[in-house]
Image 1 (tube, rainbow, N blue to C red):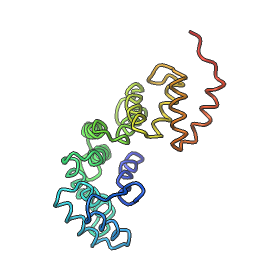
Image 2: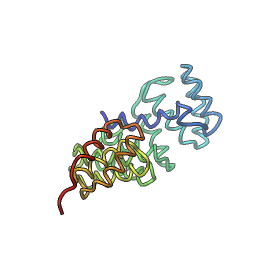
Image 3: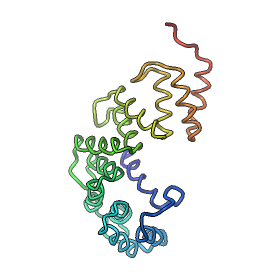
Image 4: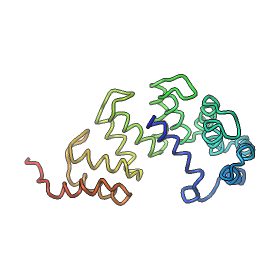
Length: 218
């Protein structure tokens, strides 16, 4: 369930002010405070109010923190999925990403690999770096789709360009080893340095190795 956990973690940003400095509206903000105070039914009522106003963050909050978690309402993966789909259909990239992951794992909806990839691709095309990284991982692992390192590199590169340190680390390795891309030590070094600056400590050993590895002969 590693991929599902990754997608659902996107929604946790709603509950960390450092990641979400300005709530979309008063109902969302008040709902967050109530939820963190374990007043789940009251949080649900607040989010339902802003859901009716079309706020996709409230739809996602209801899906993950009320229905999927079973707090403030009976636990229901089906109802959680319905909330995610509402957000996705209102062009929420986060909603599209979670919908895609739900389809891949059959969480609250009939399992469909093709629909899972379709919705994750929509989220990535909408600019969500974590969705691009998710697609990269899928193609690198070959778990739900045929393994394809070129496509893995394509999607990880998009995520890396979007500032995601995990994908920057992946691209550093990919350029070092020539996995899915042409071997390029200069590009590898650039991405590894960005990954290290973003907190990916594993990049340090790779940078050290890169510095002592001779360039391949022409």
